[in-house]
Image (tube, rainbow, N blue to C red; front, side, top):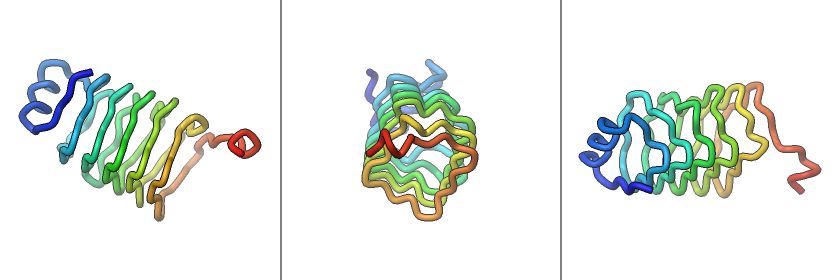
Length: 125
């Protein structure tokens, strides 16, 4: 897993690989442009700009302590993704399968879930 902790490293890695899968991104404010796959990526204490549409592939991604207000998740693959202590307020999840996605101690004020698959309450208990 490649560790990215500065904007320069982020830009260089993104330019050379065109993908952020299997990376560890720490303490960055990400650009407002489109993001590529974040499959199996780890994001720690990052800020993602409001209005950003998240990439389709977020399988196995881990987000810890991230500010992710007002993001759009559309048909995103969130299989085994995990959000811990993230602020997802005013974000929108549309047509996402959230049945295996974990949200632990997240702020989700005014977050909208539209046509999403959710975990079976009998299994989650």
